[in-house]
Amino acid sequence: MINYKKIFIIVVGFIATLNLQAYTDSDLDGVDDSVDKCPNTPFMDIVDLNGCTKKSLIKKNSQQSPHHYDIIIGASYSGADYNQASRNDTEATSLQIDYYYKNLSIQTSASYYYSKDSNGYTDKGFYDTFVGASYKIQASQNLKFYIGLGMLLPTYSTSLNNNNTDYKASASVSYSIKNINLFGGYSYTLIGDDDVTITTDNNTSISYKYKNTHSYNGGIGIYATNKLYLSLSYFEGDSIYVGYESIKSASIYGYYTIDNNWFMSLSYARGLSDTATDNYASIRLGYYF
Image 1: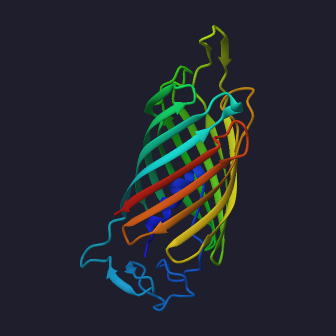
Image 2 (image 1 turned 180 degrees about the vertical axis):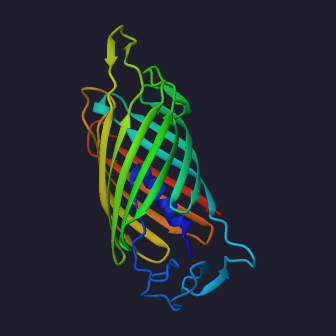
Image 3 (image 1 turned 30 degrees about the horizontal axis):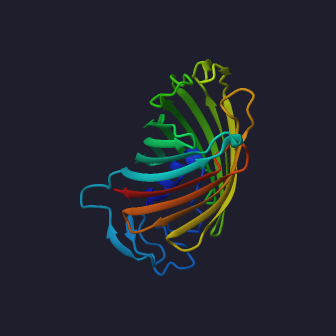
């Protein structure tokens, strides 16, 4: 069968660049050959965990729709102590909607945050809204490439003049060896925000100059079971501000398929540079149809 839920993981990977298709599956039913009790099932059949047909997607005198969707809600927490100037804790909720058509996926996501620092200052509002598309190129059964384009709409409002649309391009690769997945990616972001000078409470002027950014990531993943995928990855990317250290972090990720429609993911990232968030954790729940 065409397993579009796996493509969801790649769309999330448009930011994190995670490709999770990893196991050998000769009849393309989503079940590893090593545990498939019903080999060579029809391509358009939905199968159970044993690889045996539960339902045929081909209806009489009609074909299965190539259009699929998912809706994902999430919650996250991040804590940062940038150069020990002040402690900042942020909680956020998010909504993501994906559309799939064959090898093409389109995504839009938005999130709302509430933050508070150790000095008692609070802030809330929307982060920038992301809209993007990704296309899969299947070079071989084990080797896949992904290219993506997207934009960050300026729904995040601060005193730092981030009031223009940013544009992002990305490319990633995934190579599978049995149930092991090696992945890596690169992205380039064209920052449209205007340079700004702000005055602090003690009448000190600080200038912020923006720059376009490069980022890289790579990692390794494993299908622990037919339902559970786990990965470790490393990320490094430029700060959007001129003169600031690169952002570096390491993360762990888990994706669990609950049933044919429901799925969830957990992630944790640890900052490895002064410009990175010290700790980040998220949980997401999705419904595919």
